[in-house]
Image 1 (cartoon, rainbow, N blue to C red):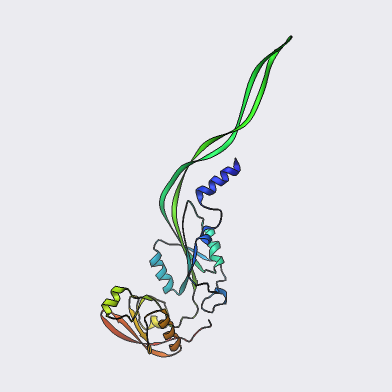
Image 2 (image 1 turned 90 degrees about the vertical axis):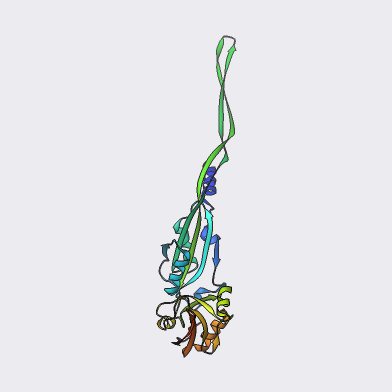
Length: 259
């Protein structure tokens, strides 16, 4: 019966394996983090943070110089913090931010087989002897065990500190609405500016649209990376679009770092 109750407990709380590992999505395209010069491998245990705004927390982490290694997402009855920390160690994260949100209560009943022992008494009369005899029958019966468990959506984001940053703007593609406004396909949204980087000191801001770096127009991740590579260690003109106007910033990019 004890073994069955353990199975029932696992059913109610989730699964025996680490859910943060089981439902992890890698954001590095399989990069070998330990051999990459782009990141600082932590030597201390991961810092555990509790968040309530995934987008806002993510922007703050990017602006503080962190990169997103990946994330976990699942629905379960319970998930302990130690499991998240354990997975953070596995992926070399310096910080992990946890989120949880109640979704529903799951109720029902599970069949439980339990011993059913019955004793019957028989009156005996043999010659001058009169008495009773007890007969014990061993069997099992099935009872329904009710359960009720609160279920939650759990999420975790895993972060690692970036090494020397050449430019300092974190970008994503333009929306269709932004292209229409610009009347151009050329440009990238700046969603975060890393503190104490060339972009930060040039007063490039979150929400600006990056049009070009040096001689390179920027309109996707490849052109952005090419522009950074060509301008590393140089002072270049960076054109941004802000509040309906194009502005030109003089920015000196840092030298490259080992891949």
